[in-house]
Image (cartoon, rainbow, N blue to C red; front, side, top):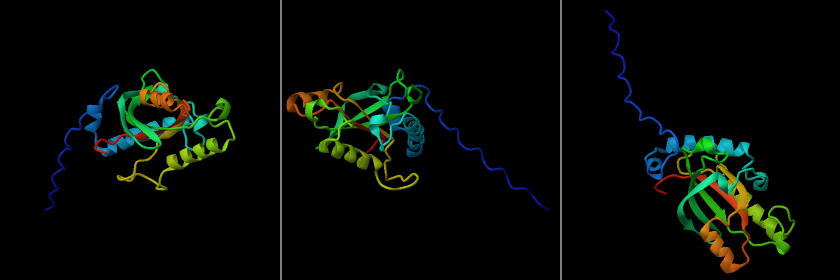
Length: 189
């Protein structure tokens, strides 16, 4: 006589997603798949707003769309790195459940104050090509747990960021308008 198997046990309850803005402490508790899924939602929105590596100057995204969390977290020879979250009052307000990394590239001033991405100077072209190359990242389709994908790029005034403003004042050759690269934040490096 056939005896049907016992039904599978119910899965354990899943903790509800936090509603509204997320804190850095809550973000650090999320698994990499949740971070990836939330980041993908933001990437879709940034793409809608034109924040792509192909032409970061045409993006409608601005630094005001992000709220920088604390001081810079890292720096290199050509960039500063900050933690940020989407500003609820900005055009990314629907994504306040996401914490990102903003990479702020150092940009040298152009002759006669020419606007970034509107000149044909060699320095400007080289800078824009560097932004495109770095934002392109590795040519890998899909999610790989060891590769962080770029969510978007944009150009804006970086002078509200204290460290960038100090560099502008101290060196005198750094332009306030520069490129920003938006990356997902994975706690633990």
